Length: 363
Image (cartoon, rainbow, N blue to C red; front, side, top):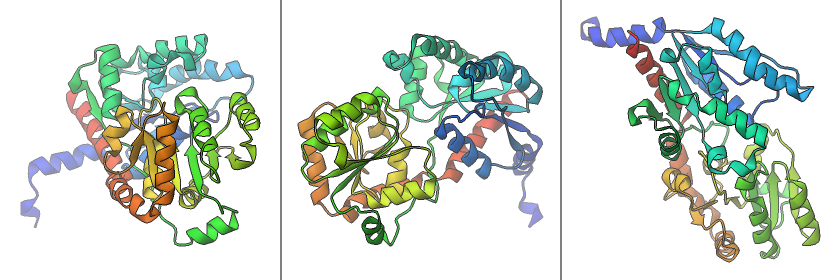
């Protein structure tokens, strides 16, 4: 059988293990859950020649985190380079000033602060712009969607061939549970239940969700993520406080999967997204999804979810009522099929292919 093992295949096999890769994770200071999950999933599914690297920063005072991110981390990162470097978060693209850019790639989730600058403080936006302005230096960029790739090309005039689209995978912990009815009864979910998972940033359109909820008699909302003061005041004024169960993050994936299973639908009327992790998780868990009709959601989830305008309360309310009155299993079927295509191993293999391309460019 050894006679069928061609030299070309042998060389590719050797390349995978002769190439050392450093995956630069965010400074460990609480961090964003999406980055922690992204890098952990990659390291769990990539070969052992890929190693993660980060530094730890004290959580207080606040300024120390930025000192570590902008000054101390770049100085430390320079001494831990591999044959290929992977910066896992585009907001850390400033590391390209310290690393060899010819062997460094960056994952870009989105450029939403550039398209919706009102969400960030003036100082935060200035720091963000300073970091992402380094993106064109990278040997390659991984974009998590075509929509993100288009934004990179629009804002920075980066060549098409320098950007690879690699969709996020979804973990096996997200799956339908056989005891859904028992869970709903145990947690007191007797009314139709709408779920939202995400932050309270304006782009998440949480006020819109509350306005839709107000018009759907008898339905409740489970909000996994913080609510801001303005939305809490709106809930109190409109008599919605008793109809909303708010759950503070972080939430482990097993508990989160339980909420996807107990909910009748996930409602994601976002105005901007780079990808949309909660949508893939809900689909994998067998939870029907109603999304805003923004381009990235159509790119990723056409045929697997329902769509609505994120500005028309009447239209969205009508869609929610129809979905609550429909067979949940039938609504979820196409989502389950789509989620089955988005595996963590597929994401890791596609990412490793980009590592090999960057390494080959330097040979």
